[in-house]
Image (cartoon, rainbow, N blue to C red; front, side, top):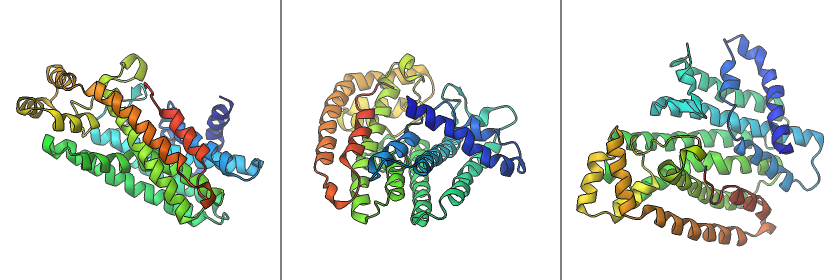
Length: 335
């Protein structure tokens, strides 16, 4: 809890640096409004990973730098969530109306998200220009942006087509790895690795391999909770079925359903209205998707743990303790 409180307190200090710049360009309220209310898991992961990777206890400057890098990841997420909500036509985010739904905001939110993303590079230059891996830090954020945009494009176009036959395992894997896993799991750890001087391509590659797999597992959890989770626990009502999202559940249903169930999915998946949603959920239940998920989760956790255990820490990359920390934080979650 202390780590979370310290990390959260850094936001006001960091954002105060931007106030003068932003006030010259308009109301900076989007800066705080879009970065509050979340769990801060991605930002905290940068800090905890850095503490584990540094050869000695962190100095005050290293404490500060890791917290700043963590908030840059939170800014990154804030920008892409604003764009995602607009593209999906979402109403609520973190229990409040989406930023673009705010009074007087509308599609100005598109520019607000661009500004949030630009703040990342302003702060990187201000605080890390003298760091030996400054260029690599900048390039990593650019790669994360490109990957996220690729995943978003595939997610949006697949949902827009509404064609069940397009929702393949290969397409799902592409969306999950790029839209979610890269920035949510690899980016925070890779930032910490670069900052701490763990820069070998082999080490970064090992980390990426495991972290992207963990990220896909995380996305599958999200898909399951969207349909089978308790809204009182998750804090949100699932919309994936009505939004025609390419999810792990519909991919499994495609492979297990008979001709009549396939027809029902084509008729109701992606259609608005609770009757259509109940029909799809009924098919998922008939096919035993919930039991299939339980078996999958147990098997996948074992596979991920085996990947972590097999890592060779002598290669100078990520430590097993970092990966175990991340896996422990998400396994068998209910929200």
